[in-house]
Image (cartoon, rainbow, N blue to C red; front, side, top):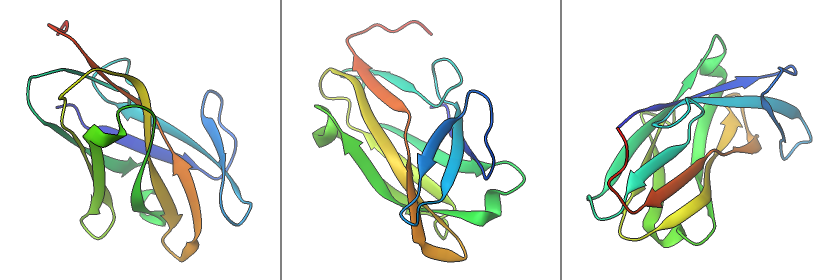
Length: 135
C-alpha cells in the first residue's frame, strides 16, 4: 500500500488546507502519497482483504508535531480505525474493506510536540470501491 505523508506549515501556502487548532492557531496542511492523485487519498477494492497504510510527517518542521488519535466521519467508519505508533511520530490506518464506502472522511488529530493541548485535525479521503480497480 502506498504510504501517506503529511506536511504542516505555520504560514499560508497556496493549495494547502487551512485548519484552526484548539488554541485558535491557524495551520496549513497538505497530504501527499496515497494511491490516487498524490493527495493522500486512498481507494481500495472491496473484498480484497484488510488494507493497512502508514502516515508520516514530512517537511523541515516534521519534528514539531505528533499524532494524537484517529477521526472518522461518514458511512464507512465501522470499517476504519487508526492509532499512533513510534512515539506518536507515525500513524497506522486500517481499512477492513468489507463493503463499499464513498469518500468517507478520515483524519488524524495532530498536536504540537511542545504543547500537547494545541490540537488540530487534518484529513484526506478514503473510498472502498467494487473492483477490479485500475492499477
